Length: 326
Image 1 (tube, rainbow, N blue to C red):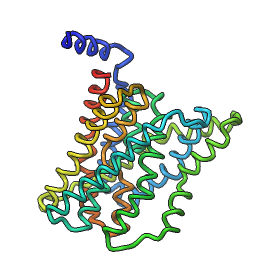
Image 2 (cartoon, helix red, strand yellow):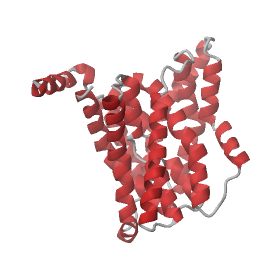
Image 3 (cartoon, rainbow, N blue to C red):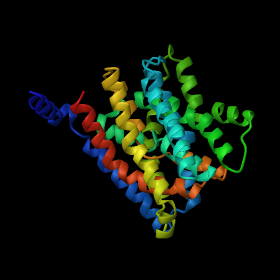
Image 4 (cartoon, rainbow, N blue to C red):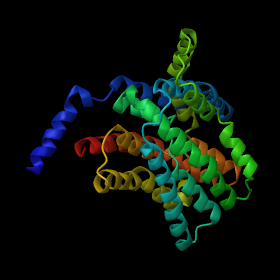
């Protein structure tokens, strides 16, 4: 009987409702390759890659947040996506503080693994992958996971971890300023407070145009950011790299599935998208924070370079698991 149920679920997954959005996947793959090729040929250096990322963060991503959250009516229908992100971050902190002390990792090394394994690339990579796997209707929920379950942990707990474990120190005013002046967060607040208003048609058209540019630009910037270090660097960080990516891409998402779906019996898109966002590749912004506080940035960059291509396999498999055992 159980075999027949699983087979029936697999048949449902093959139907158009569960079909992968292949156009979105092709766009995702081509943009990543284009960014990587531009970097390798010298057309796009460190400054160029960072400029692309800054443009996405300060222009395109706020437009997506403002447009999508405003269309939701300004209400937050579920906190599950945000809670999944916080569970990922707190679990990473607990696990790698414990492991690091027993393996005698330096404080900076522990901090780097906590940041890389506990924070996912929920927008630059998360939005395109979710568009591919779940369609554009998944983006409003993904925004909740990104803003409340990734950016907020980074700007609070992540900054504290980097400052305590690295060589620099964060001040309270600096942390508050970082949170309150982050453009997507400002866009989120504006969207929530203007929910009862109808945007003028011209403004909505501008937001739609900016939103359309977000995914390809973000993917090119991620591809340009990927740097594969030499064998010596890989050997130096092999243990922390394997431990961090195993937690980030496999262990933590599976635990979330068992807890949310198994223990609490929760179902629906908020659970699925929250889990999928938690399973995304390590966050680029976390690596930038690690570098700012001198917290083993070389390891953080390696986690991104290795974890991003692997996530293109692990996240779709996780999506299939969520559908089969829905």
